[in-house]
Length: 449
Image 1: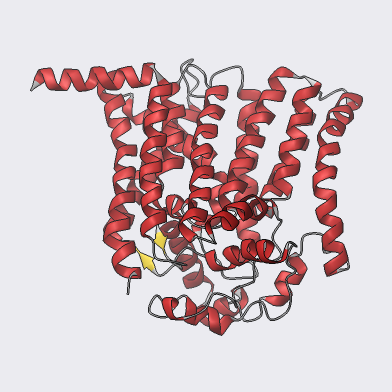
Image 2: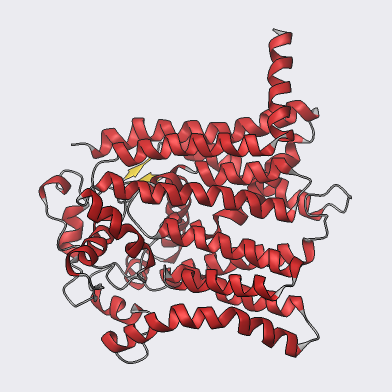
């Protein structure tokens, strides 16, 4: 028995000392789980999937981009459609409320639609692939920040890979997968340009940012981060800041400008993103003011925070399939342990602190900004509409995953190193098991009628 334990510890130590193998294992396990979600989740039981699918179909059938019109959102029909008992019986054609979205994801998915005759599983695999690439980029970001701590990079990659709700979203037809991938690439390139300070690097950053801006509005969160990075690069050199920003915003204007002009032509006014049209079209969507008036602010806030936490980890389908309370309690305890451990680590002034490296002046503010703007955008949207869905926090999943990994790893330092690494890995392995368990125990039985 002792020999078996010693062998297990040796093998895990090898994976940590050879992090590329550990990353490959995480990515392969993610693909195995995500493909199951893509294959076994009933049709149209990923939030907003029919509306995203209709966008791709419109491109293939008409050769043009759609325009969001009044009548493209019907609250009563949506309520009927999202009932799993009704979904198989109802057409998806009326669900067109995503027609205002930027086009890049849909343009990339259109050839797959055309080649497969609109096969839903094939289109879901496109998102699965983007999700797999996101795991690799998350790992590379942490290796840039802390090259001598591969376990933190692996932990962050595993967190991104195995949050159950995130897997469910990555296995559906939507532009979230590409938007998150591009946002992570922008963050990675931003960290690199601050270290390299080459003109070509800033130009590539502009290309990535421009692609993000024509993928989803959440990627606009990267704009102030890039501005901040330019200021960090030359805090006393205004000319240098302007020069670097010019290298960034030339490709940004080339990509985004075409889309903005198009939106101005079809929506009018200053509606360069179609958001004003969207807010006018989604008549009947629950309003925060109405809920507060009906429930009272205290109960409303408690319900909002509870639902956000639950749906961050896993509340499947169209928010209609929660996990048992015991699962959320366990995840809550794990989250608290990670927050306490992360705070403990950040306050530590020892030389082996998780952030004590030369990248700290550049990396920490960028990660904090991304998390802050993501949470701020979530709160801002919920000031108007009731959208207590934790998936809207996924643009910040990478910094959240790093903080989670730092926090859990801090507690593991109290154990012998190899044992601590094994327990550390077991936490993320448990999340992977939860993904599979949730699919077969909750998603399929609840949504298959």
